[in-house]
Image (tube, rainbow, N blue to C red; front, side, top):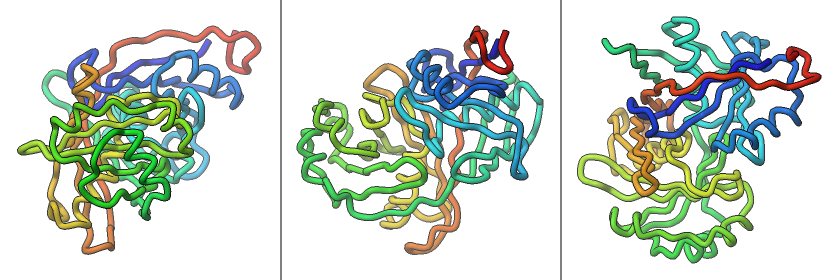
Length: 284
């Protein structure tokens, strides 16, 4: 038997935010079994927790329904909050395929836990299929389209306003032909930013909260002096699919020299259960 927990991430309200399934001890599962379980949950990501092997407190692998990711924001932050509930820890060092990710936690009077993660600093470059992407999204991009990689590759497409953002009806068949990318569309919205993410390449038609994309957007806005380095911004996602999520991002650096990226948010546990797998090393 493999115990799992489902948490809604980047929200303090059950059935909002972006869910992740966390397998608490995946020792004995093969890569094939992990991929099949991720397909079985049919969530944007499922994570698998292992004992540490390289100086962290825990090791975690992340799978979408179709691929393994070296890093992803919402599933790792959700996993960290689940482990903070399980272990009552104040900090956590999480080994990932992208390196060691550090978390700190805050608890409110109700017991809800918020986590802050130090994300990998992304690299960036012009996106090679910008014209095809913009056409498939049916939008007018208001600035050059850039690709940021911090594990996943997020292609940032800014549109004029939230009305234009909400009106996006992407051609998912075309997007599916664009490899290794998510289309992370964004627009200003008064005191915060709004975003939507589409990624058939990663097995996700539309994501309710994309923590790695939020980190990339925070860097992008600071690099272009839209916000100041060291200024925390709020990014809301999931509005159009009824899963409102709130992510908080702080990028630090100067010019194109980014020293750190922090992404924060809450998560709530909504389900617990067991996977019954015959023949697995730790199963029955």
